[in-house]
Image (cartoon, rainbow, N blue to C red; front, side):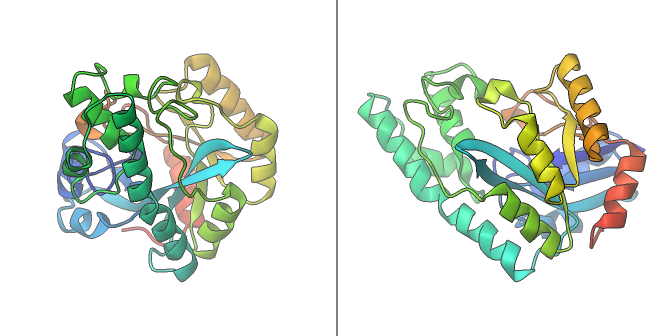
Length: 277
């Protein structure tokens, strides 16, 4: 089985619609795919309606969290999307994205960059607006060559010149909410140092003690040595080690199924989770 547990659609900051994503996942030879849009499950119904025969779709979301001033993401799987506590928190984070993006546009304008809110809103479409949409606007204007080049201290990186904070969930609370909704909690790309500061391994141990199910080990932002270290940490802490593409369509260079999750690990996730399609 080929299992990719971290993908994004136009419901957040991917470029494939949810329907296109599942069709592309089937064409890529995947057996299981998780739709993990940022702080939302709004694309799930469309993905289910277009699901190719033989492809399993996993309920998912990538939750925006912050621990001791460090931004981090928590992948939630197989939860009840209508459970009130987790739903309210997702909506709170998602609603704060618009004023945050407007704030980044204002800071860019102060620096003389002619980005407009209308441009960013057009790029975001119906998705949950975020930094990748602002980054895409910078690419369109020729300010930076790629989306990744916008995520630096000069521009949109954490603490950068045009960075604006938003509401982010405490990761211990995120774990509690995910578990309360019957879900499985996995720390996304925990050692992605290219993105900025990362939480220390001691914090991962604390999260494990609080009920964290796993860490995303095989990911494009982890080099081989980092993957080996994280795999050892997962074993030491009794955590599941997942692998995923973090696919965003044309917005990033990774491909569907570029990294995958071991079938036994996925099987354990399904045993712990509340729902799967």
